Length: 87
Image 1 (cartoon, helix red, strand yellow):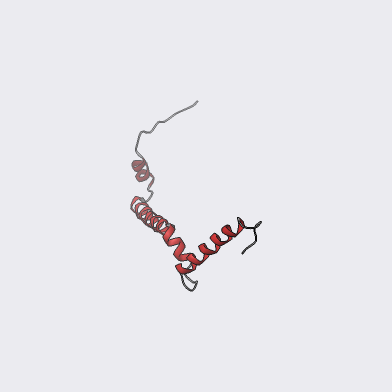
Image 2 (cartoon, helix red, strand yellow; image 1 turned 90 degrees about the vertical axis):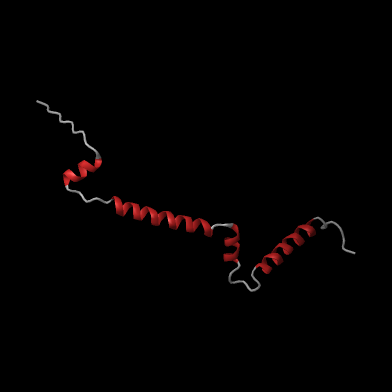
């Protein structure tokens, strides 16, 4: 013998029937906090913020970045003149 019982109810009605706590307000608060943290993390990944964090402890700050760029360009410029003698 096989007996099948179909219960038509919403998830909230089932939760109340079984006496489970309502966690929806807590879930909404956690999701709001998670969203706030994720958006804060995205702001830290902006290129300007990343460069500032890289050169935060370097004396000269962004001036060091300009010096680094000049060094790279000088290396690229010297690479084209390797076969020639400097006058």
